[in-house]
Image (cartoon, rainbow, N blue to C red; front, side, top):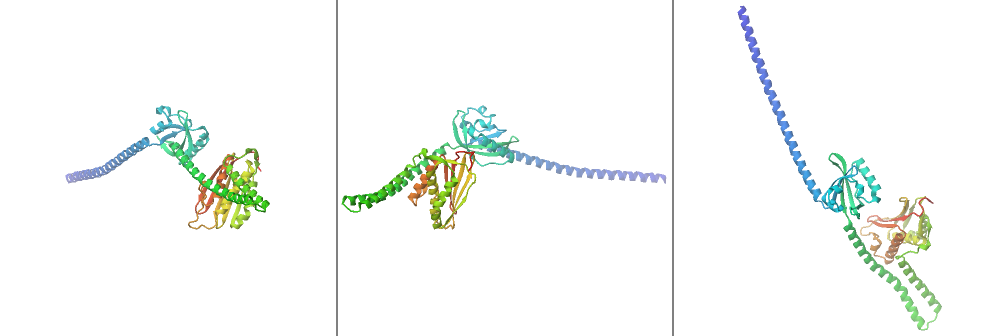
Length: 406
């Protein structure tokens, strides 16, 4: 009996060993499946990464070819130093090799007057990690020549570090083309102005010719004729005087003036005409405005021409807004904005530039004279059209005494 129990024990042990072996075999199979899945996943991931690397390499190669073949200068600035420049950039800067440029400060090739502005823009781009609008700067070539360029800064990571990519375009030829276009427009304007002046002078000359013939025939009322003739001669003298303003003002009459007060006088003068045209004159002036050195009568004439033109160009009524402010320590800014009351299709202001005003020759002459007055006062004037609203005349005049306010 004892042998029987021993035999049964051996059988049970054997069955246990077989079952344990079977379980281990099944576990190995499961593990093999898991390992195969992991291997397949790893292989797929490696293949995906390989494809991505190949695509990235191809993209970088295409970008490199694009940058190298670009007709514009493309450079990368890191810590305010040039770390990359393409062939067009080397040619533009008149460098013989990259060694003359790479590692140099960006300010070596930027004109000194633009250094403060570029410093601020670099700080802004790196701090905010965003691109800024393109601007016009002056670049200094290696031979000392300075040229105007258009610069577009772009925030990038170059070799893993925050950098600024510069796309730089030489605009010398564009400036020449624009100057040729301006000269063409001026020649056209000269013809229009000449026609207007001829018209202005012909009328009084016709009167003078008629009265001269009457006097030759022995007509009576000579005193009355003389008065009319003198009046017509004054008209001719006035037109010629205005035309001469296009040449050069007489600086001996220059004095210190408060532009706010000048504008008040002009507004008062044109108040009646504004009411007749259903135009409201609204003034918003800087209280402490620096004084300006100017020829007072010419300044009044300039503002009168511009505001009067704005009123006449709004036959359906509207507003003329006059704003003055301090632009910076060297200039004050005067803005004259005309806003039409009701816009109607087909009705557009023609005040884009004084050279393009066509309806009234006197208005064209007046605006041309106004531009010349501002120019002769070392100022700047700009005309902008808002088709559905009106026009803006933007004037900058130099400050005579920056530390003296009124």
